[in-house]
Image (cartoon, rainbow, N blue to C red; front, side, top):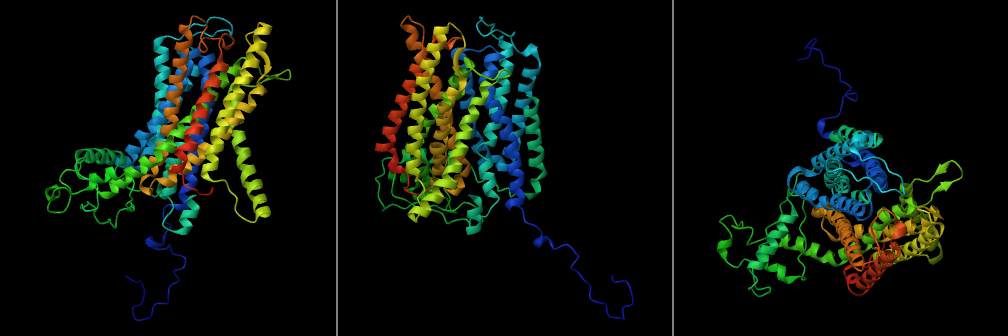
Length: 536
């Protein structure tokens, strides 16, 4: 009711100071949400990368792990952290959605980091300290169990974070518009994760949280099963295919039917009208699938040849986080009289090399090439992958040569620590970083481009799966080589507390040979699956 005399006209009210209606209020998504997602990602990465850089040194110096056991623990933990991304992608797409999956993953990471902090702060959780040259007391089973639980929690957290963070950031923009597509392109460690959770939750009201559309992995299993059941049906276009109309409310866009991998098309063939009920829906989804389910699987099959190439590259990158750091432990790390370079810092050189290359490529190479050639001369995806493979081969060759020199000087001086300075390791770590700059970035871009929008989380999970398989294969290669060389009655190439008693250089050269085979495989087979597109 209005207050005042009803007979007098009411003066017009100035409503400019009033809040806008709900429909005109700020919409969720966009850069309002991205700032929180980036903050969460930054603090989580600060914590996780700190652990990755120092885990080898920590297990060697604090838990007295050595040789094959040390490499196995690091590589298996790294592989498990990456393969858990598949489980995270399934949970995200089928059940929780990306927001809740990210939140749960970050909490698991925090718990794991807190447990690792306890191992550093409580001497009872570790074996007694040991000198470099001495025979060290190994940790007890319960101490290892607590350590493995800590690493397991961190691996579970990584499974929720890694496949969803980039995809969740992309969800905040409308990729159906040109503007949206352009825009879319220790205790301190635990504190970083706690801050990341707080910032992530503070921005929850700004996020666009898309509903789970179902996991494509179950759909793929259905397609394979249905195609196998109908394997007797002859391929051809005289058949009727189950291709329901696109749901206008669905966020998943239909794919165009392609002619490759025709054997999978049988999964969508309506062999008998009884396969559909009265509403036109399949009675048994394990016998009749939609054309879209088939096309999703085709997209995944098409990237597998290139995915194998990625595994070959990542095997090389894994060696620097273990054997490269172990080399640094047995080298002269002094700078002046009062400073010693921590072995874990060597991994920073890989990141620095990656950053320098990005700067040189974006700010110097591209601009200079445009001025001189008057055209866009960006490297193609083919070229970047090939260069990355070559860098991986050179990395292992350089590492082998450096190890020969390091070991020879240590034996000559009869010293556990070689007089060769640790900075000699910079080239091999830099080459490892360039492998990531060229091959890894190009492969991640390839997976994202080749898979449909509905499989964003899967694209990230597939990338981390290649990292995981590389870690497991690296473990297999190390253990196989240790067993073979041990049977010959001589000192095995790998294993033990002292690298001076090993022949790590031979191992490096064998991995380089594997990289050469990977290059031949890509040049003569896998490259035809990569589109001839410029870097973007």
